[in-house]
Image (cartoon, rainbow, N blue to C red):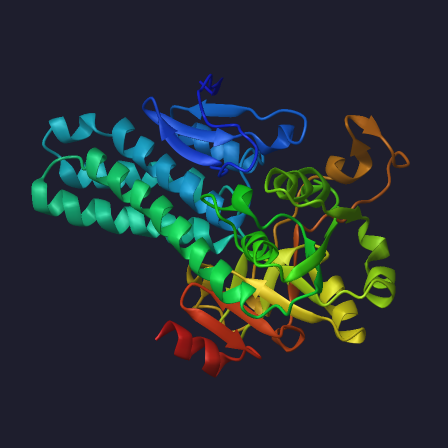
Amino acid sequence: MITEYVNQFDRRPLRPLRPVRWADGGAVLMDQRRLPHEEVYLHFSTSEEVAQGIRDMVVRGAPAIGLAAAYGAVLAAAETDTIVADRSPQRWLEQFRQALRPLAEARPTAVNLGWALAQMDQAAQRLLMAADQAPVAELKQLADELVTEDLAEGEQMAEFGAGLIEPGSVVLTHCNAGALATGGVGTAVGVINAAWRQGRIDRVYASETRPWLQGSRLTAWELQQQGIDPCVLVEGAVGALLRDRGVSWLIVGADRIAVNGDVANKIGTYGAALLARQHGVKVMVVAPTSTIDPALASGDEIEIEQRGSDEITEIGGVRVAADGVEVWNPVFDVTPAQLVDFIVTEKGVVKTPSTVAIQSLLA
């Protein structure tokens, strides 16, 4: 059963945000649907509950989804633990993989989800063969290590990205690519936080990001928690902003990056990147290398998630569209590599992304 988690987590201003945790034998996720009005955590005790939480947008952001899925895999291992008592390790592995399937299918575009589950599956197989017993504790340790690695990668990306930003810069970000979308540092917003602390940024704009309003609900709130006062705007105002307000950078995260540098990110990123090119604004994409999918030659191969029409036709449960109107609701779009100036990862910075440059980074 998914329950509200009564906790003693640090809620002071300027404290680190940790949207994905393990506590009391289960995954604990900050319910991001209830921000900015309430800071609420939910406790998940089964792998299917975690999959449901991912589908329902309790947690979102490619890295955070992957970390939540890793803890879901720990729960899946615990759920199938009794099969090993029958001395059937192979059957346990089969049941474990079956339990991972709902997690893998929860959100199709975010590559970190599949990456994290692959890490857990490979470890389970290796540990099971070595010890002939369910490796629940070992998988929990691995999931914890993935969270720790995510935090370290976030700090490294923040350092690399901030170093590219000139003092006096004005930046625009889209959707939420901060601590809430990761294990706790962030990608694009991590860079913005670091550059702000270094005195390199004078102003931050955040587009509201319809229909889930991740920009106005999450990014604006998160920046305020870090002592930064952002300005929120609708996506329809991005062109005028880039023309009239001296914006230097468009800084965004990514949910999947093809090996040629094409970037899948929240719907609206492609349009913002086109406008940035028109107005001479540099584009920085910040993402860990786990977001790069070496199996995809280009963004044409990226599966784009489609969600329900009610996300467009209703706001707060109130219908705002004509009855019977057709709705097209893609969650992501693909920005071609030629519109991207820099891809910042924990391993380094790719300038003018290309297949050769990204393959060299991954080598």
